Amino acid sequence: MNSKTSFKPRSAGTALPARARDGSQTSSSGDTSDALRLLVRRYQKWKRPISVNFRRILPALNSPDRLTHLIHPYPAKLLVHIPVFFLATDLLSKRGDVVLDPFCGSGTVLLEAQMAHRLAYGVDANPLARLIARTKTTPLDGGLLEKSLVNVLKRTPQEPSGNAPDVVNLNHWFFPHVVRQLQCLRETIERLRCAAIRDFLLVCFSACVRKVSLADPRLSVPVRLRRGQYPKKHLLRAKCDAHLRQLRRVRVADVFARIARTNIARMKNVGPHSNGMGPAEIVCSDARRLEYEYSSNGNCNTPIPDESVQLIITSPPYPGAQKYIRSCSLSLGWLGLCPTSELRQYKARAIGREEFTKRECDNIPATKIAKADKALARIRKRNPVRAAIAATYLNEMREAMREMCRVLRQGGHVVLVAANNQIAGSEFRTVDYLRAIAEEYELSLTACLIDSILSRGLMTKRNHTASVITREWVLLLTKGGIPVWTR
Image (cartoon, rainbow, N blue to C red; front, side, top):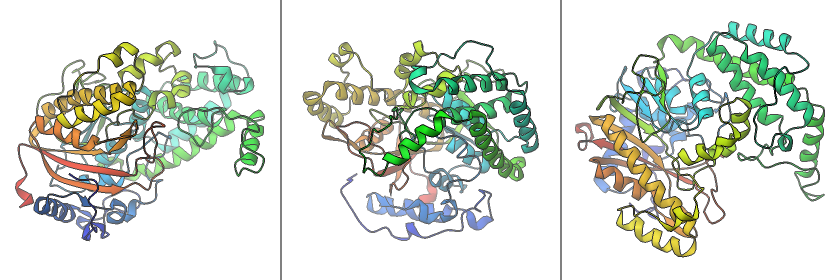
């Protein structure tokens, strides 16, 4: 693969009927089989990456607020068009098949797999992501949610009954009156008996936490706003100062109620399709060990069976990944999902982590990928920490890939969304290295597609020595050889 190769997209950019704007299947004309066959055959003929624009192929999905996808903000969300494209065809999976996302984040793939009548399995190391994904994929009655919201707002007291939450630097991020109001609201929500409704309102509460905090709303990782932090003539000066003034008199219950009512409306939009939706389950927290960690079906702590998954669609983290735990740290504390003392441990569990000790940096493991190790040697001379991050990432992704291949059926497929970037000023071809790992486990490259990123949710600069990632590579891999339908 050569990322510098450029050529005009062909009919890959042609609009298809796809799905209705609410996400439901319109008719057989919404099937993406013909487009997928065309892309795969072109790749197989030329063996060069195919430029594709998923937004043009599925224009009905260009409105971001559909179903429950926007129930809670989350950094670097996967473009929804990608899973829809690969799920709206029987070539890769059929109704009732298991679709797995081992890096599910807030559940984009899981929700789309449900809408395509598949059984969705999700895995993620971040407990907030698991809560959001579980809530997003659990259809709830809008009327019951409205009644529960009204009851919570009526019963929320003026003063909290318990101790202050274990939130990192609590007084740095929140005004005292905001802390008091949040605490009262959370205590009231926690008293709800129905677990699913309680989770829904806790997700709304989590979204409210960030809005009433002193963190800059423009950034995913918390950075405190300060009055006058922008020069007098800066475009953001007045907006920033007005936001801080508003927080001094904010009524938390009003912010929470607006978020909850918006999300209830989203849940109502799911209602008409809920009878045909496939089930979804958050199975575990570690892509390197795929087992029924949270299962309620009696299989707890047993591995997901070999060759039981038909399709994997996932966007794994990158080397020096988004600071997911740090970006969610305020919510994790307020929801009691991660004590302050354990934040470092949670970060260490994530693939693509950024924090390494000096001892770890001095013992950088070989990746057993010749080109990667050569690139890492160059990076090590400039920045040993970044080299340790990248090397550890590839070795941990090898463990995850091994597990993915174990649970994948013969003839099953993996849709892997990744990107190349720069580390310490040197090019790091993550896509090539992940492909090399996949081939170690007999995954054949069926097609390689490239889509330019237009979503600000994916446009991210992960380190001051890294480049902004502006293109996503989509690798379609097949276990056991190139499928017959590509001929």
